Amino acid sequence: MEVVIQPSAEAIAVLVADAIERLLAAKPDAVLGLATGSSPLAVYDELARRCAAGRVSFARARAFMLDEYVGLPADHPERYRNVIDREFASRVDIPPDAVQGPDGNAEDLPAACAAYEAAIADAGGVDLQLLGIGTDGHIAFNEPGSSLASRTRLKTLTAQTRADNARFFGGDVGLVPRHCLTQGLATIMSARHLVLVATGRAKAEAVHQLVEGTVSARWPATIMQHHPHATVLLDDAAASGLQLAEYYRDAFAGKPAWQGL
Image 1 (tube, one colour):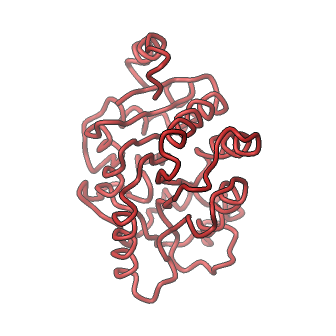
Image 2: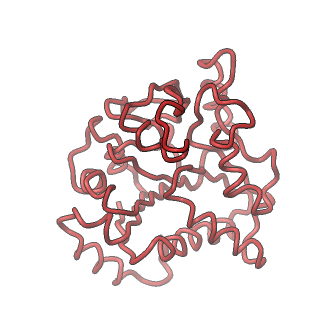
C-alpha cells in the first residue's frame, strides 16, 4: 500500500487525474470504478477540466458505480446514479450507456446484485477503482462486520453512516434510506488498482486503522492492505493519526518521477 500525503484536496485530485489520464492514454477502453460522497468531488472537477481542454477522453471508457440506495425514486437528486451523472458523467465525454450501477429499485434485489457482478466480470473487471472511506472504516457501503469475502449484495446502513450522509438530505437522517446495494469487499479487491481519497480530521482514525491497523472486519477498509496495487491519498488532517506520516512523505518524495501512483 502506498500512502501519499498532500496539502489539499486539489493537490490530491491532480495526482489521481494524472493516474487516470495515463491509464486512458495506454488503454482508451479502460474500465473505471466510480465513487460518490464528498471525497472524489475534486477529482471529478479536475477530470472535467482536462476533458474540456482535450487532455483526456472517456469516449471509449466504461464505468461501474460502487453502490446505490434502495428505494429512492429514479429522479431523486441523491440517487447515486443521478449524483454520478451530475458530478462526473455529464461533464465529460463518456457515453451515457457506458456508466452502470446496481439497480436499487429492482423487484428482485438478489438477482440484481448477481447481474451486477456478472456485468463487471463481462467487462473484464475494473482497471482503476476510486474509493472514499467512512468514519467507521467502511468502503462502498461495506459496514463494520462485513465479510472480507463479500460480493455485491443488499446491506442495512448503520446509524453512523445514515447520520454522516444526512447532510445530503437536508440534515434529516429520517430521509436517508436504510438499505443499499453495494459492491462487496472481494468485488472491490478484484480491481487492478485501488485509489482511496480521504480528507479532513474526521477521517483520521479510520485512516490510521486502514494504513497501520490490523486487517479486520471491524474496519472493513483494512482489507486493502492485502491488495497488490493500492494507493491511499490524504490531506494533512486525514493523515494526522498516522505514526509513520513522515516516512510516507519521504518515500513519496523519493519516488522516480516516471513511476506515478
